[in-house]
Image (tube, rainbow, N blue to C red; front, top):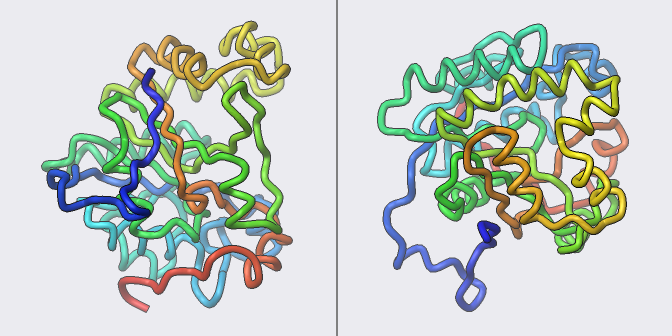
Length: 279
């Protein structure tokens, strides 16, 4: 079974016994446009530019990536202010659709791949994901073409008790999905047409069900499907190896979607990390 979780010794990750961490290129998906409800409420061009504790949310993401020690280059896809632009290596305008933005980001990331073998894809609205969390995810990820993190409900609620999250009930427990993924070039190429199919079928539930598989849909509705079965289905759809990583880091799943989450952010969850880079 490919599902993995972080291993700790005495509550501390034993980095000294591990080889040098892998290096990746990061793609920050920070589009969405001013039509996004949160961006509209804040009067900015995209959700990642919404200010939180004096800085745009996207700046916290860029800072965590830069300070992680495992990221070679950062490609930021979407509107960026001067502060964010100075923290990343390349700013790419977002496309008309999410799949277009992904393609632009992947292209820019692999064009300057250098020693990096995989892409770390992350959304620009996870301000609580810290540098050590980025490092943990990249280092702990199994050797698969696609690795996707999930967080147990009890972990997410313990860290962010006031923030409402969507949890999926599986045989293995209740989980919420992370806002990141680790991909090889092969997986990135395979993902794009699948994203396009999902977008085209978004208003046709039965087309989506056919893509995912009726047995998986029934299993999701009844809470009987397992993470291992989801891994197998993802691998079959993409034609590459897909794995799920159960993460102890609630920050990887703590995205900000609604104005109410900005209001509770000052009293809910861990403190935001200090920014690394230009102010």
